[in-house]
Amino acid sequence: MKQAMIFAAGLGTRLRPLTDTRPKALVSVGGRPLLWHVLTKLSAAGYERVVVNVHHMADQIEDYLRVNDFGLDVAVSDERAQLLETGGGIKHARHLFDEDSPVLIHNVDILSNVDLGWFAQQHLDDEDAVLLVSRRQTKRYLLFDNAMRLMGWRNVETGEVKSPYEYVRLTGLSQHGEPFNELAFSGIHSLSPRLFPLMDRFPDRFGIIDFYLQTCHRARVYGCVKDDLRLMDVGKIETIDQAEAFLRD
Image 1 (cartoon, rainbow, N blue to C red):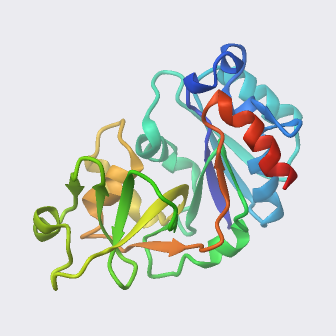
Image 2 (cartoon, rainbow, N blue to C red):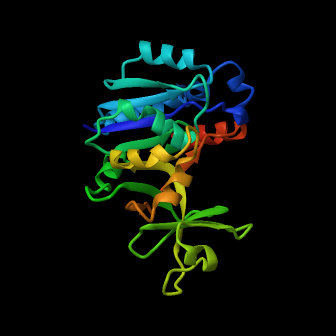
C-alpha cells in the first residue's frame, strides 16, 4: 500500500494575518488551499492512505477533509494537546500506518515539480529512509558520502557539525579526508516503518532531521538528488505572490 503523511499541524505564524483565521494548510494559493495541492498530487501518484496531522485550528482541517473527496483513505493524527514537531509527529502517528510499506513525508507548505510516484520508486527495499535533496544554496547542509549515505550536517555560518561519527564532528571530512557531498533538504522524504522502534528512545517531541542525524550510523539513510528540482516553500506572507507565479509557471 502506498502511504504518506502530510505535516499540517504548524502554527503558520509567519503567514499572519492569513493564519489568524485559518490554519496554514488552508491558506489559498492559486485558488486552492495548500492542503489541496499536496493531496491532489498524492492521489495522482497512486497513493492510497494519507495521514494528516493537526493542531492549530484543527477543526477547520477536519471539516475540510470531511467534505472534500480526494479518492484517498485519509486519517487525522491529532496533536491538539501539544505540537510534536516533525519527528514526534511521525512517532505519534505510527499506529495509523501499514508497517510493510514506506511512508512518504511531505510538508503542507511545499510546492514542487517532484513526481511523487517517481520519488516513491527511489526508496529501495534495503533502505531505511530516503531524503530528497538538491544542490541549492542554503545555510545548513546535509552531508553525504560518495554512496549518498547520510553522514552528518553542517551549518556554514557557524561551522557547527552534527554527526554520530566523531571524526566527522572533528574534521567535517570523511575517514579518508575527502569532503562530503553537501546538499540541501527539500522537506520531502520517505521512511520505512522499520525505523519506528528507534524512535522509542526519543521524547514525545523532536525533529526528524535530528532523528536521522542521531541514527544514521545504525540505519541506512540515503539522499536522492533531483538536479532539476523546483521547489517553493510557502512559509512567509511575502511568498504568497511568488507561489502564485510558481503555480502558473
